[in-house]
Image (tube, rainbow, N blue to C red; front, top):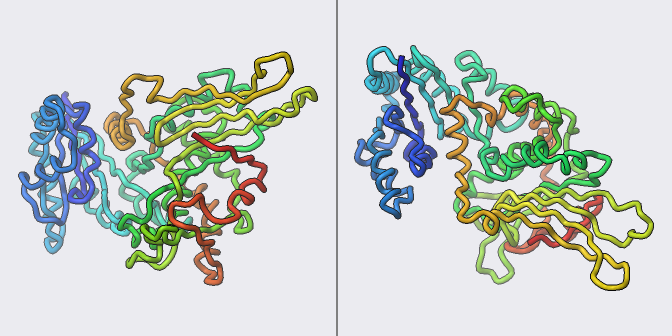
Length: 446
């Protein structure tokens, strides 16, 4: 018995994540794509929308895009017609079935989270595959706090099993994040040092050099803690600190990540610094509150980067006390890289040390690195039945427990005022002292 697949993008007029799959020709003629949205469009309009969003700068890419678009169609949702639009979607999918073949159905919900439940109920009622698998794909935020996250899961659960829900955290699809486990468990040199006996501290940082970029309303509603820290940074923390899983299966990975997150205590407001950017010193870039759609918090520093830094403990050798920390730096983005800071003898007759780096920068080490986009990788995992990079309900619950008390405290206390810092600066005054108070010794990064 053969098998086909249908990818339904709900909210297709605004988000075309599946378009990222055209570049490698990952979808053959047995994979169909259906846009499903309130925006009134026909198939030709939908294909024009796809073409406007993708790169077809070479004849090869143009041919792949043409083949990809040949498998795309569109259905306009009629909100006033109840289940009629979903029944039309079901008939469209059934029309792709040949003979007695099974059909896998994937529903990518590029929708506001407040309608996840209602839409998922209609999909389960009208569009669930009779032969083959069905899966809904949802993106963060998965709730606003612990209580709402648990409630969302409780409402999805009657219609969709945990293995039928793929929660996307696109950081888990980034090349250097995928590299963390290989680095940890594929290299004895690092495996032997990756413990509390050798590592003094770990810093996971994400900075942005942009402002709200027209998304002020989103940031004011969600906030940077929900948008980045509770999900992206907690996933990096889990992969960095978890015990070696029994295997790379979804169950083992998710279990170990959830287990280590449960050991993290809730964040205390005493250990936080809350900042908010104001207009740049030259006045050219507006501050957060200058965005008409917002009244409260965001991010804009002097550079955009995400990295994990491990500082090892000082040497105990009395003869070499004047040495710098050994440091392992994993640059997630941009310019993926792995750097190891070491101490070596300064050339000459005296015993003096100097710091140096072993630098594995993808752009310099691998000629024309073909790094897949995060969404591209994650969607392919979904279609291949691999849920290892789906954020499990257990991980969600554990990560929300870390941040929910802080969120409630900040949102319930109007007297808490963010520390202002200029757009494009290095951050609020006192930031370096605050970070160093936790034993991390900041060093300039390249």
